[in-house]
Amino acid sequence: MAIQAIILAAGQGTRMKSKLPKVLHKVSGKSMLQHVLDNGRKSLVDQSTVVIGKGADLVRESLPENVGTVVQQEQLGTGHAVMVAIDEIQEDGITLVLYGDAPLIRGETLDKLMAYHSREAHQATVLTAELDEPYGYGRIIRDGKGLLERIVEERDARDDERKISEINSGIYCFDSKELKKTLPKLSNDNAQGEYYLTDVLGILKQEGKKVGAYITDDYEDIMAVNSRVQLAEVQKIMNRRILEKHMENGVTIINPETTYIEEEVVIGQDTIIDPGVMIKGKSVIGEEVTLKGNTVIENSEIADRVTVESSTLKEASVGEESTIGPYAYLRPKAQLGRRVKIGDFVEVKNSVIGDDSKASHLAYIGDADIGKHVNIGCGVIFVNYDGIKKHRSTVKDHAFVGSNSNLVAPVVVEEYGYIACGSNITKTVPKGALAIERAEQHNIDGWVKRKFKNLEEEF
Ligand code: UD1
Ligand code: CA
Image (cartoon, rainbow, N blue to C red; front, side, top):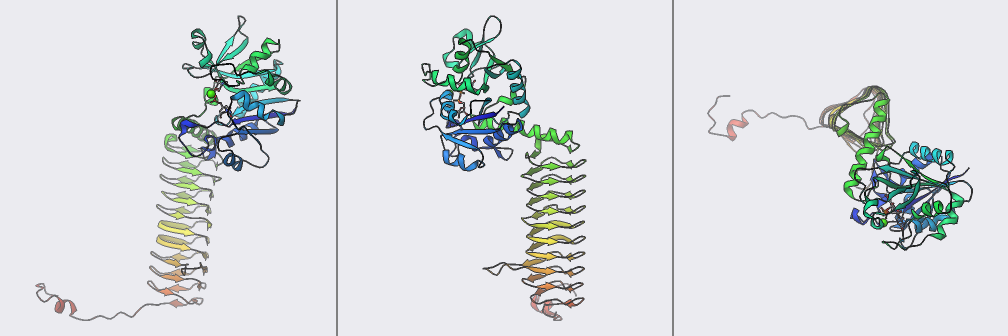
């Protein structure tokens, strides 16, 4: 049986006050619409069709190729939106209707909705919830036996109907054939002059078909975003869910309120995450890693037992037992071996650093291939840019680069090469040689006394 989904995403989202179409706003690093698609896929949705309208081009560009789109030129209501997409739906099977601005809907909730729909042999089932403050939502009207009769919108409801606390989430499961047959029967004779998808259930009921409501007790699942305040609320819930999953897997998160982790991040057991840490993108963090406060990690790989303190890592990889920071900056293609030490105010970009090498303080390492057991002294600069092009340098195993040296690329330091501090290195340093490049020191006796004639101290 085919499971197909229609995702409504044509609305303007006026209250977001944004140039970006509403469904493209991100929650935990991924657009709301993509969350909905991914969650549908977890429920084995075979095919999704997104109804787009406002900002159609941008929304279409954001989607993977296997997701179909249809354009709803004018937003004439939720029923109309589904009409526009209905030719994409095959007759056999069921159709889920989802909202592109309700990203918290979980696969398991959709599974429960569909299971209930099949078990009860319904032609249509709506996902509902009981709310203390149902204002604004469509209300679920049940008959004397407690069975679903119809759905009434806030603006069309009578006073007694407005008191009903069971609301329409806007998420439905339809028998595809019945949905196709019923859509042409919708009218826009209502307070908003719109074609209401909700009316499909009332019509089916009147025709004697079986319709029903599945009440979820998880209100969070159905929250839709209409404003930036709601975007932040949904973000908070999504983040909490992600963090709880990691804690259940054996990760310690000291203060979940101030820790932000995006959905695709993988974290190993017994890793400890301090307050103020952000982990983004497709980052993979190993086991027994310690991430201390104010660390930001994006699309990076961190191996087991690494410690990172107050540092920023982007598209970097760090080998086992290395220590990073505080205040280090690992930029794209920084690839660090095992037991590497990158200390305070060290920046590494597009460089490979071998096992047991160190750059403990204040250095810039760009476009370099550094071997094992290399020491990069304080204040060393890999001068990789000549104003037009970048050049690479190589520093081989066991080399020692003294403090405040410049390695002017392209240049090679052979194994056990030793660079005296303060040198500007422009030529190869041979194996085992000391390279020293700086003016000789002259001492001028008595200079200070002659310069400052009225100094009183004796020296
Ligand atoms: C709708 C339901 C209401 C339910 C509420 C839940 C109807 C008539 N009402 O109301 O019962 O409680 O959702 O949030 O269905 N959209 C389109 N094209 C359109 C109109 C809407 O794509 O022509 C999309 C919007 O982008 C949005 C979703 O459908 O993602 C819901 O539209 P919205 O106007 O917000 O519905 P409500 O009036 O809130
Ligand atoms: Ca509306």
